[in-house]
Image 1 (cartoon, rainbow, N blue to C red):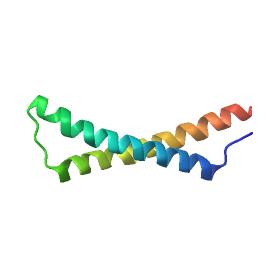
Image 2 (cartoon, one colour):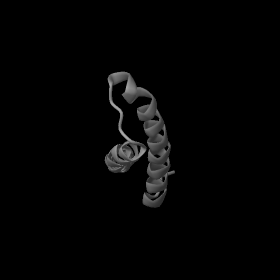
Image 3 (cartoon, one colour):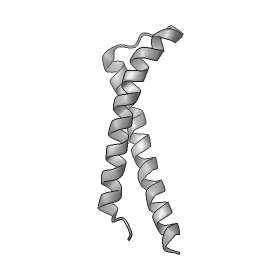
Image 4 (tube, one colour):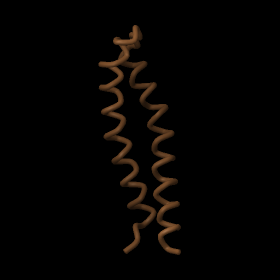
Length: 71
């Protein structure tokens, strides 16, 4: 059974959303250990940049593996 493009996108978005929440919480906890004190807004923005990159990466890899699996 193959995964549709739509389901690949839904999986990638879900994965990235969970990762985003985890990343922001991690940044809030860990950054001060290194002397960094960004605001909540900055933490959300930093996380947002990585969300975009992660979403593209997850979707592209899913489609690549799907294509390889069909061979």
